Image (tube, rainbow, N blue to C red; front, side):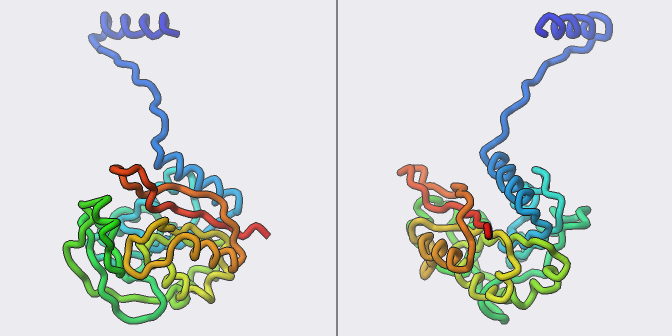
Length: 248
């Protein structure tokens, strides 16, 4: 193989004046591997609708689309700037719908959300020192008044055409309230990805054990973990994504 490559390079250089550089196939990144694993589970459970709560700029939806998920997606995002970028990310994808800008929670109305310096860490809840010290760039830089709705208020229009729905919740400590607003929706959901905090990072949030116990009581079994946030100085894992499915 090396002889063939050298011969091709010599011919292209001597005859056409073209210099060729062979590039090795790079292994997938950790984020790509995680997305591929999620897509594998979506395929196994025949998911045809993903409700993407806390979409930010569309990172999660873009990753699973690139890794082979071909079904419908509906993204929800409260921050105005992130929502604008989310709209751009979804443009040209007819199966990716972006809901009008709003937060998801346990009631319909308005709420104040804190805007983090890195956007992804923005939350309705106050950020604790444990989070800010591990990621100084995440410090809050402002606030925004946003509409808030319960998932039960908005999900029906999408669920009526779905065979198997998957709910992704990434709301930085506000996951419990999203679940409170989804009591009528959850029976129609086959899988859930929810961010789990191993230590308190936002004031008043529920930690990983409580969330897992709640989802198990709803009939979901833990399927996989994916680390998402660590304190680089101490090596301690602070947040993971938990993936759950109804297996019976």
